[in-house]
Image (cartoon, rainbow, N blue to C red):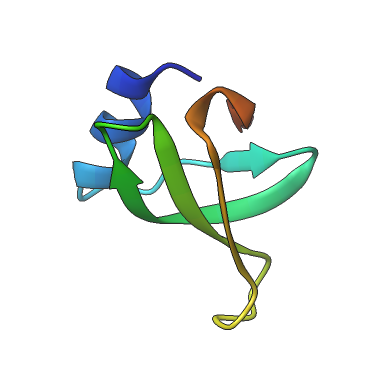
Length: 60
């Protein structure tokens, strides 16, 4: 996913399906300067990781 799309999803009031390596994630924060996103993996709020936005995929 590119930074523009990740930012758009993050700022949207709508819900979009986003995945990281096949796992559903929720975008918690976008670091535009460094191209990174902090995401919650699955439904556990404590399970967060920071990854390059290019690793994120928009789901179906």
